[in-house]
Image 1 (cartoon, helix red, strand yellow):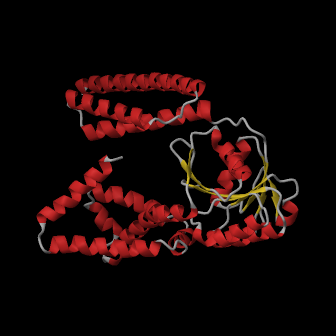
Image 2: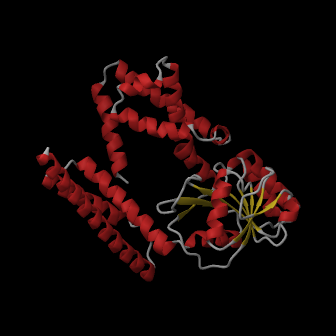
Image 3: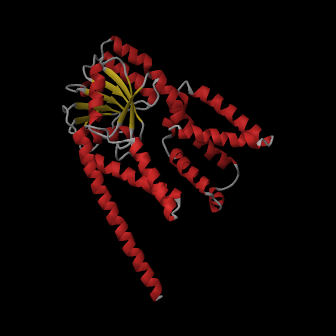
Length: 362
């Protein structure tokens, strides 16, 4: 027992040294963040991060440490370093303070934007059909009275409601910049075209993250230009001092890409859960013998299946490109099944080889 105590004490001291070294690394990372801001370069440098990971993996191999563990550890450290840099040096706001109205401000993303914009120093009010307000924000039930004095109207409602809100704002000759955050764009294009005809300053974005987001490090916001430089500039400037990357896309390109990035990823995980439920086995029975791959897939599927089913249905049903996606998915399934049924080992291996090459292109 005495020997065990000694060994545990050694581990405790090593853990403390590891944490101390991590703290020193974070301090250096903060210094790098300050230099980046001074020079005016982007927070994230993919080539540098890739090099850091590769160096770590090589060193892990040299000392006999599991390379997958090393890769995961270094990736987490890099992620935390980015968060540290953003919190300390990239989270400020240097522009004009706006008077913002969030339509649908009591929903998940509406609340996220309310707190985000308030933290930047903007004056934020909320319009929502729900009768209760959000602590710390002015609340309006009537959208017409809520528009008075506002410079930005952010639409954060369910997808099917967005076109009607845009049409209402157009009918009221809204003077503020109008911006929706819809995750599918095709069905709102007619309303946006009417707004443009009435000279409404409008733009359209899609934050590629959910309301649980705590840092904008490594996050993306898609921007679909509606022809109003003033609207685009205001939204871009709001995210300027964060670590967010703004990706400019046409409406058509946005929905095509989102059919894969959201439509496919959601659908596969919903299909995975449904298939398991229909198997006749209880989850606890499958969990008893779960493999690493099963657990990893379950973690993702679990996060999807506990999301808002109304939103996830609309993401599937409102994007016209999902129909092509389903056809392609069925073809891929049939091809893979045929490869396995006919014992085409080389063809099966080729899928892996091509997949690795495709991923390595990144």
